[in-house]
Amino acid sequence: MASRPTEDDEGLLDEEEPRAADGRRPGRRGRATRQRLLDCTATMLNSSSYRELKVVDIAREAGTSPATFYQYFADVESAVVVLAEEMAAQGRRFAEHVRASSWRGKKGYAASEALVDEIIDFWEEHRSVLRVVDLATDEGDGRFANVRTHLLNDLNNALAQVIEEMTAGGRLPTAVEAQATAGVLVAMLAHVSAHRYGFEFWGVRTADLRTAMARIVYWSVSGQKPPTT
Amino acid sequence: MASRPTEDDEGLLDEEEPRAADGRRPGRRGRATRQRLLDCTATMLNSSSYRELKVVDIAREAGTSPATFYQYFADVESAVVVLAEEMAAQGRRFAEHVRASSWRGKKGYAASEALVDEIIDFWEEHRSVLRVVDLATDEGDGRFANVRTHLLNDLNNALAQVIEEMTAGGRLPTAVEAQATAGVLVAMLAHVSAHRYGFEFWGVRTADLRTAMARIVYWSVSGQKPPTT
DNA sequence: CCGGGGCCTGACGGGGTGTCAGATAGCCTC
DNA sequence: GAGGCTATCTGACACCCCGTCAGGCCCCGG
Image 1 (cartoon, helix red, strand yellow):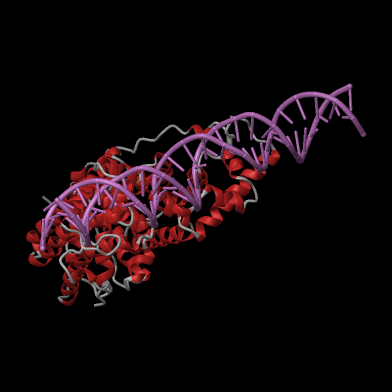
Image 2 (image 1 turned 180 degrees about the vertical axis):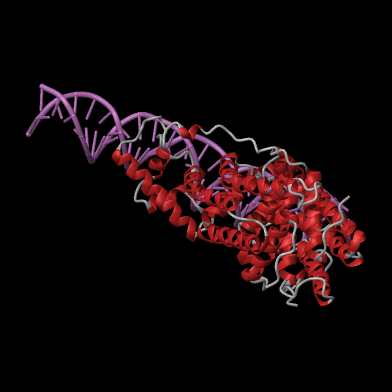
């Protein structure tokens, strides 16, 4: 039943606290500039690789100087972290979805398909930011790892909980470790969703990936064969 | 039955062709220097992050100058590609293993466990290089994507073939698309293996991940519940 | 209309990259 | 065993981006 540890959220003190480099609380003009910088960052993330994203370029795009950028963000990644956090906040629904669904029989399989769809769509919508999150996380950047956790942790625990219940109900063998299974499923969902285009390139259709994953999720959670349609 | 397309391997013309910057074929001394550079790159990859790997440092470590490095490699990544290719050559065994195994009954589950173990071990052994391969691939670097493909493609096709056979034999519903299922399984195996330590950090044991994955692989391939031990 | 603090920037030192032209080392020939 | 040729190495340099200041601009409140 081990639940993932969670770090202290200093972010809860104030809604948002976009502090400037010297600790000042920016006024109206400052916040506008900050937002402009953020928007440009998001835009440029769509058109260029994350590695090529230079402070100079963002600043120029926003019609300001590099020095101004550093007044609001410690580096490029800090700006992207903000974008990532905004995105992650929208990811809560996955877990809610899992908890609200019935996981038995045809309904269970439908829930599985719906979950997979939701995740694939989410990754599609936020792909440029998520790509950076994955990259930076793999590179060992704790800030991004934290965001990624917030995004996936709820889903992970929700799935684990369902699996626990199924095990307790005798539907799954006691040998299955709920957290491990949930973790593997989440990893699969996130990774495959992130690499849709890679698969498409190799001639594997997203629709088939979706079915393959839905089947695995359903079987892993319920212990039953998915209904063949 | 769509098989992944494969790129032309110009590498087959000559065993290895470590050409210098100006197209010369290096002599004995040159090859020794090149190898020294390569060894230092591998060493430093273990102790520092890939992003921090500077040409200057590698050169200094190898007791030579940066300019010399550029005589053998276009950039740091080019050197790592060579290391990655050497590693990938060892990954052939996964596919052989899949093809040589029986995938039914207890033997099938044992094969599944063995495959998972083999992959986890491989990722452990080559983790520093594989981390770069994953990172650079995600970043869109074609050279690394190519290596990654060579490494996983065989396994993917081998699994897909087994799944096809199972489908033909009526053991799996015809709705399952072999390549998609194989792709999802490979993605899961590679991604979870690459993030073992992440899971351990969250209190999920590798042994449990292994079981969870072995069960999913076995079920996906054979359509049967894994034997409960 | 006149401070003064919030906001911006020009200018700079630092460190890494990639490329020369020229120095050096190894090897073969006579 | 000296000359000469090529392979190999390197110091020096121009470039680029980073991140930081000190100082200047702008705007609002009084």
